[in-house]
Image (cartoon, rainbow, N blue to C red; front, side, top):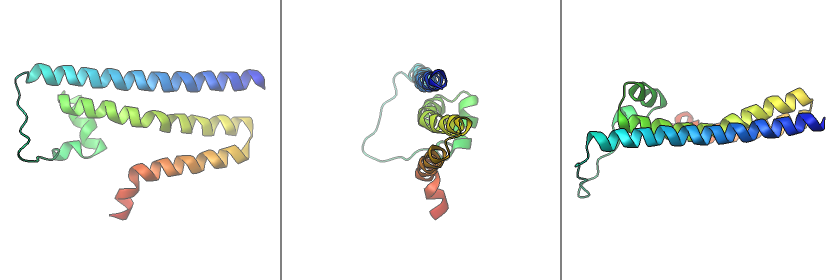
Length: 126
């Protein structure tokens, strides 16, 4: 059993490390493309301009990121960063289920539901 726990810990560490590195790489690529496409852009702080509609939903971000829009690529990197701990919790649910530890499966599912509600709860209320 000790070998299994060590294997799970190593897998979780690699999952977190890989998720953060992938997210950072995507954000950096988006930033380089953004700065390369408009190096002399000036920011106006006199008026507030919100985000475009396509950057307000996951579907819009993914679609426009794969279309090569730099701001969407940076947003996709941030979504990957948010998804990394969620993937860790989902992996933990399966690891505890394989181990047969029902109590930790229940606790981890509660943590997962709190995470998902914090992300998508505003859509349920509105």
